[in-house]
Length: 234
Image 1 (tube, helix red, strand yellow):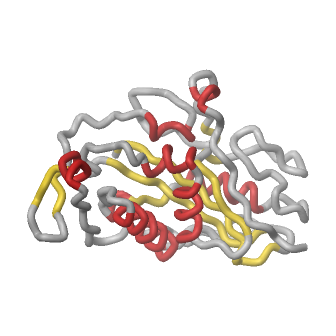
Image 2 (cartoon, helix red, strand yellow):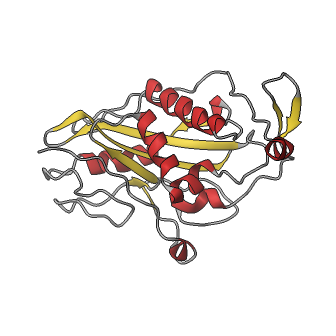
Image 3 (tube, helix red, strand yellow):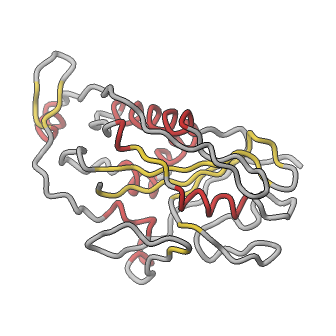
């Protein structure tokens, strides 16, 4: 069966107030505000001052002033974090350190290309709880790759209870950690949730949590991916 590319949009804003966070199998990250996990990025929990960023000319300028003057920040260096290369009980491959670095690299490249300050490399972090939910989707025994796909509340064909944590979702055939970063940028709701183009404070305490799986049961190729990401204070 030919696998088509797909991306699941975030819940509509009208539902964001009414629907509580649902986290199965792991406690939700600490937060001063409880909102659906897809919209956690819309809640600003940072109290830090406006960022000071380096410009291509080598000087420094606040991010707000940089946007006003159309002076864009440069990308950042540093060390990427690691991911464990876990496998599900059924043998589905999980997030590798390369996946996490690839996602972070593309995510920041997109930000800088659009005159947005990059996120520190160390603030891109593997999320085991989101990965558990992706494994649960990938191990659905149905030959339909969209079976079980979706946010908390989706159902597997074998009725196995859902596990893991929710997030912004993207994936499909011939996708990588880099292509899903671009898919989320190109989706207005996901751009708002993950990239936050209107946010002008420091990114020092902004984290982006990520997980991706490769392949699935019963016969999906490893190039068929499912990915999840969320943004939160750290």
